[in-house]
Length: 301
Image (tube, rainbow, N blue to C red; front, side, top):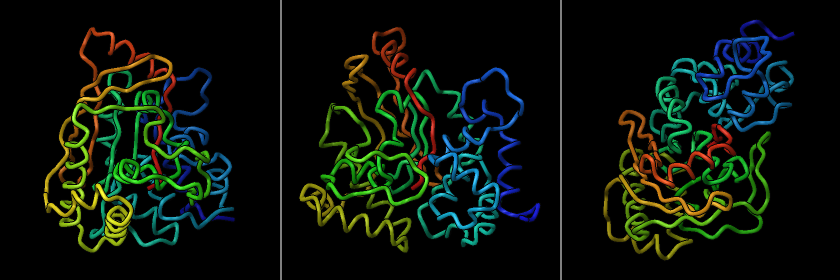
């Protein structure tokens, strides 16, 4: 029998204390508990319900670092609790020299309140998608349908996915053939400026996290696989991606013009991407309609 302080029991305690409203989930009638259901935790973490059940029952005791990170974000753990989760799973806590992938509970609560009025996603310093709200998923398509490696804005924008690419982490719901962060066409007002800004931002991340092997491998992959990326990298530019204007060609609601602003959590180098429409416009109505089909979630990195 698993200890009351073991991984499964601790996951249950953390799940029971988090109300669905704090996670951006809609209120549902007939609830028997104030906390999250297993199905809701699985949805938020991008895992299968069966895998969450096995973790809580002690039948799965060795989640990968990616799964542990997704659980920590979904459960809105603080840094100390996240490190404790990693240790219970037999993992070393995330290195302070690596690109941070944790989102603080306060940031998650603040962003959850924007759902329905703005499409919001959180990316790490290497442009790996970490979290999104329902409006984002409704606007661009469910990110859980995308293999983990292609939930990276830089990789998705510069490389052409191959047929053999897979998800690589147990419990997810990725579908074969879906490889882009947006599942339908998106136009930027100045596409070249966006691409240049992303490359300059990645160079800045390399300066901040010079010992992060995954970040270095990503840059090598992009330089080897994309002449466009290699040419922009060769300029040596360092900077950040701040703002853009986009048109999302949504198949159900039609073309939707949006302002795209990139905010930064300075301590963790998180990139909070916020997509909004002009108040009272047809685009705002289309954004609200797109949100109805959304799926809130936290991606495994």
